[in-house]
Structure formats: C-alpha cells, structure tokens
Amino acid sequence: MKPTHMQPWQQLQSMAPHFREMSLRQLFSSTPNRGETYHLTAGEIYLDYAKNRFDNTVLKTLLDLARECGVEKTRDAMFAGQKINTTENRAVLHTALRNQSENSIELDGIDVMPAIRAVLEQMRTFSRAVREGEWRGATGKRIRTVINIGIGGSDLGPVMATEALKWYSLRELQVKFVSNIDGSHLAEALHGAEPGETLFIIASKTFTTDETMTNAASARHWLVEALGEDAVARHFVALSTNLEAVAEFGIDPANAFAFWDWVGGRYSLTSAIGLSLMIAIGTDNFDELLRGFYTVDEHFRTAPLEQNMPVLLALIGIWNTNFLGAETEAILPYEQYLHRLPAYLQQASMESNGKSVTKDGQRVDYMTGPVLWGEPGTNGQHAFYQLIHQGTRLIPCDFIVFAQSLNNPDGHNEHHRKLLANVFAQSQALAFGKTADEVRADGVAETLVPHKVFEGNRPSNTLLLPKLTPSTLGQLIALYEHKIFVQGVIWGINSFDQWGVELGKVLAKDIYEHLDATDLLRYDSSTAVLLRKAQQLAGDQPT
Ligand code: F6P
Image 1 (spheres, rainbow, N blue to C red):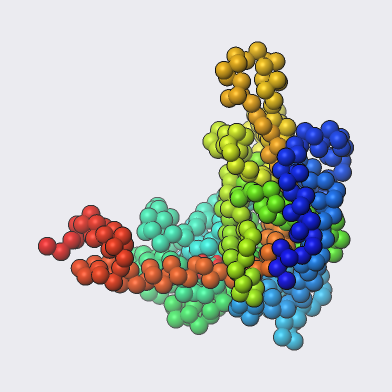
Image 2 (tube, helix red, strand yellow; image 1 turned 90 degrees about the vertical axis):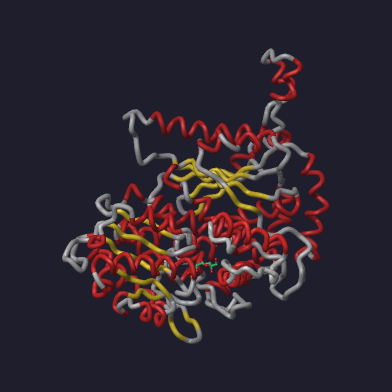
C-alpha cells in the first residue's frame, strides 16, 4: 500500500496546516521544557530535535506511520541478509562488515563473516607493511604517496573519512584521491610524485567504471614509462568484487582485496574500499571506526522506535519534506575535519532515495529524497546562511558539533569556544528569529525594519558529540545510513539501486564515438550545435 493511503499519513496531512502556521516561539512557550523532552542519545551522539515544528501527537502519528510501513520488519530483513534490493536481487549487508559480535550472518546458507574477517586481516597486514616501510616499490624505496583511484562510493567515503581523521593519520605518508575523468585531477595528483615511491589503489566495485579505468590506465602508463612493466605489481593494488577484471588489468591477484555484491558502493567504506583510509590512520584506528559503526548499528537494530535515533531523524525529515514543504536539507558540520561530509552524505542520500517509482514500479505521488547540501560552519554563515535565515524557502538544517576540539592553536581554546557559541547561536536564530517590535526596540529606522526582521521558525536538529574520533565518525555515518534506510522504507522505494546513473553513461559512450564526426544528424539540434561549437573551439573543425 502507498504510504499516502495509510491512516497515519492522512492524519499527518490534516495536522500539517496547523503546524505550517505554528511558530517555534509558540511551541516553546506552551511547552518550555521542549529541550529536556525532545532529545535522544545513541552511543556518544546526543540529538536535540526540539527545534522542529511538531508536538507529541505529530510524533506519535509519525511513529505509527513507521510501524505501518514495516520499518521494523524491513530493518530486521536487512540485518538478516534477505534480498531487500529487489531490482538487483541482492542482499544489503554492509552492517555485516562491521559486525563485532561472534554471531554468524548467513547469506544463501553461508556465513559471510569468515570472508569479511579474512579480507580485513589481509588489509591490516598490507596497511602495516606500507606504513612501516616493509612494502617497497620496484626500486627498493619505501612508499610515500598513496593514490586512491575510484569514483562515487569508491572515492567519497575514503576521501571524507581520510580528511575527517587526518589528525590521527601518519603525516609522512601522503594519501591522495583521484576520481574525475577530467585529466587535471590525475595530473595534479601526480604532480611532484616520485614513481618509485608511489602506490596506486584502484578502487572499483565493478572494475568497469569508465572514469576509474581511464585514470587507472593513465596512472599505469605514467608508472611504466618511468619504471617499466615489471614495476606494476609493486605499485598497483585493487579493491573490487570483479577479481577477473583485476587480473586482466595486470594486477597481481595477491594484491587484490575482495568485497561482495551485497555491499552497495555508497555503503562500502568499511569494506576493502576503506584500504586507503586504513593506510592513512592505521589498523587500530580503523578497528575503532568499525566499533563506532557497530554501536549505532546495534542501537538501530534494538532500540524501540520511540528512542531510535535514525528512526526519529528520518521521521522528522519526512515531516519536514512531505508535510511542511521543505525541498532540501542542509548538513552543517561545525568541524573543519568534516568538510567532505556533506558531499559524502549527498551520494548516500540522493543516490539512495532519489527515486520516483515504488518497489513495485508504481509512480509515486509524493516527494521522496530531498536535495542534500552543506558546508562546514562557520564558513557557511558568511555565504549562504542569509538565504536560510531570510529567504523564502524552508530549509531544515542538521548542525553537527563536537564539545572538544582536536586542536587548540592559541593555547586557550578560544577558537573552539567561539565555534560552539556560533553553532548554538545559529539554531537559536533560525528557530526564534527577531520580530519587528524587537528590531524597533533596537532603535532601527522604520524603513529598515522589514529588512532586519528574522521570521524564525526554521527547523533544525543539533547533533552534539564529545570529540571527533574514529569511533564517533563511525557512529555518525551509521546514523545517517540508517536514517536514509528508514526514509526509503516509508517512501516504499528501493534505496539500494541506482538505475538513474545509467542513461548518461550510455549516451556519453555514444557521443564519445562521434565527438569528431561531421555528420551530427543523429543528435537533437541543441546537442548537435554544442558538438559542432566544441569542435570549432577545440580547433579541429573540418574545413
Ligand atoms: O555512479 C554510479 C555508481 O555505480 C555508484 O553507485 C558507485 O559508487 C560508483 O558508480 C562507482 O562504481 P564502481 O565502484 O563500480 O567503480
């Protein structure tokens, strides 16, 4: 049944107009202890969700909706390895990758845990060898530059987490990431790199992705030019589910790190895809990251829906998107090290829930995944917050902040104290705004009053954690993964396929073959003119 046909959905629809009018000022004055009431803890994450426009009845009805949509049943099916990715007939078992219990997890009658542990051990051995200088390049030199070549899920997770955990990383090793087909990305990564000291990690679930294969071939060419064909085995390793293609590329099967089709690309950070991260931060920190993931996996699996943080976050998102009319969500980490988190969550959320048909192929008649975006605070405050505060759109925000900083450059913790003051001030300003009378009370000229009014009533969540560690990072990522999962279940869509990326790939292949063609009649007039113009500008227009 479509969620819109369910009673809780219809009840929420009838409550929504009241809450579109209702202000957070009113809600806080009628329930002054909202802050004490509407918060949750999962692992080390404290979530304050009081600054959203809802009351207990809305919350209860949202929870009814989750139950009626089968969130608990589908969650249990995912953890149990059932093939919930129906369009690809695959299980969705990224949670097994970080399972810290002794329990087996069976897929088609086979326990997946021994294979997971074996690859993790292979990764640990290799990471230690690289970090400790035992793994030598073809000329006997130790590795100083590691370049991960991958894209999408084979890039964004490792980049985000390597940046996030830079404080914990081995600084003598440079870990770089190349994803874009644009040759400048690889060229810049190779700039100044010494072939004898460079290790390439080719990360691709399918080992067919054009961007990755093209970059890998160029990297191979660069290395072979400098050190010869025999050097490839010491300078290339691969992370993939397609071990045949890895061997064809010329990578020693001993240097291939496997994973499995039940790990979705955007959920693959804790699979072999995390090798570059493990090399950067070391095995102990990587293990701590896995334990962080597991803490929130267990919370999600066992906590009652009322106290289940991913469920609550998902439901608030659904309330804002489907009932209050929000079209986007901003992710605003007040932590410089998390500067790639919004980009990472963009793929996690938008590739998962950017769907317009239900699992059984029917067109939805309600909004699904919101546009997700963001930048670290306080930079965003001096760029786009103007629109969040005074623009015409409703933009729910997630503020993410750590009570302790990893760095204290002034010796007095002033940077961090100011950062904290800013994050709490922003959610306060967004929620409560400033009325015309309050503006007038500041002695502002009447003509300027409308410009200085803040309507407020902008919803936000604040996620407060003690300190950025591998564990808290794992907890945060698992929280968002499961939030996305719950929303997909409620919207009745398959969050684990990504057919929407296919058409562009096919057309790009066709255009690539006709880039220099003179007869462009096969294309629409706009595309044909663009191609002709590009040919002219590139200087190879036939005379
Ligand atoms: O963009 C589509 C996609 O399939 C993503 O889902 C995936 O993360 C990315 O391409 C990379 O795929 P692969 O790891 O197979 O190279």
